[in-house]
Amino acid sequence: MMIGKTFFGALVAVSLAIPAAASTIGYTEGTRNLVDGTTQISPSVDTSANPGAAYDLLQGGATALGSELNAGETINVFGRIVNSIDNFFFIDSAAAFSINFIFGGYDYVTSGGLQTAPVSGLTSEPAGSGDVNKQVVFRLLDANNSYNPVGASMTFESDYTSGNSLLFSAGPGSYVLQIDGTTDRQQAAALYDVSISAVPLPAGGLLLLGGLGALAGLRRKSRK
Image: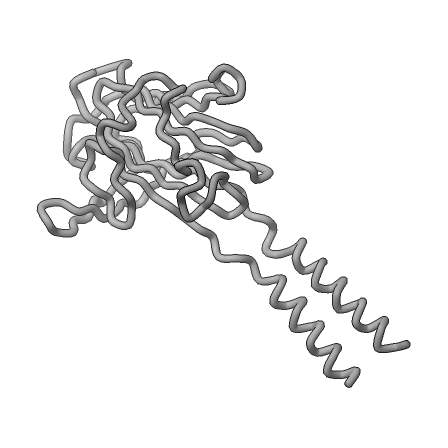
């Protein structure tokens, strides 16, 4: 019987140490061809230049991720910018998160068929073969502090499809990711592909400690 309890405790420890599968949701901004596996945002929803009217990426909790971004969760945003400003609101409850360009291409739907764009990040339209050299400004705004900038803004010029992907990193709070296409070449279009990812816990380390504690408790009981 003691062997059975010990084995069960070990099984619990191992199972708790296995990290939960990361969850991802994705959006395609309303004026862009739908990226495969994402949800299209209505064109009239995300056009306000006012960060206070930003599109809620977590939709008040009505998404698979709930109302806040937790460790290991990711939101992908695929957008199109010409001479407007796009604003996206989200809440992070993890210890840290980062916003990065998505490099490596993607699949999208057009004319009823699936197509592949060979490059992604900040590109011309169509991706990799349109009007290049459009400047786009990326900002991270603190929604709890009058939408003041968090760190410096980042300006990139299409096509930017490889290299350092990091845009911003920060900790828990409410934020607006702002993409500003009004600075240069206002009639040229650019496509932006970004991910907002909450940093995952270290490979189940905390859970493993909890599982080992349960196992130790079983061992102590078996010796009495």
